Image 1 (cartoon, rainbow, N blue to C red):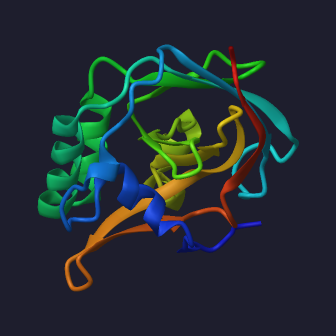
Image 2: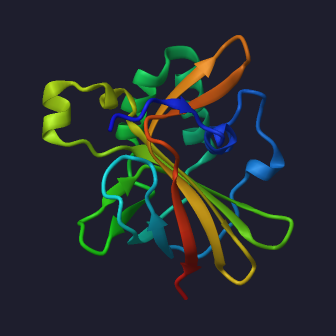
Length: 199
């Protein structure tokens, strides 16, 4: 099955990560959650990419990205496009954290932000480049254009919540609409359920 790309309903997710081009607001300022910030989640993959069976994910945030990093990502996307954005994301050092399954070594998270919610909870957003297989890169398949992972997690005051993780995402900037757009290669984002914060 070769899923056709479609506009993701969660365009606001990446806009919240790197900004919409309309300027930064006080709500974009990350809070000071203790680090490292560890979460576990049950992932239900309906994206059409990778393994379909449910898996347990460990997400660890080691640092929150700075306003300067956020601005650099947004400026790169607006001025130079998604291809250059990919290069800038890969060059971010040190990493912001990592994500892994119980059977994998993990993958670096390059960018992470946290904001408080009105209910007293937290909204965690992160983005990074997507791991690709040697075959995928060698054959230069169409999927290589969808080279980002973007995730949004909403936690309640009790440290429990849910989220969505877009595994294969193409990021573009529409100058006419003055907004960031996400296009998913898969059918829909991976659903993260039973998200809990490690104490």
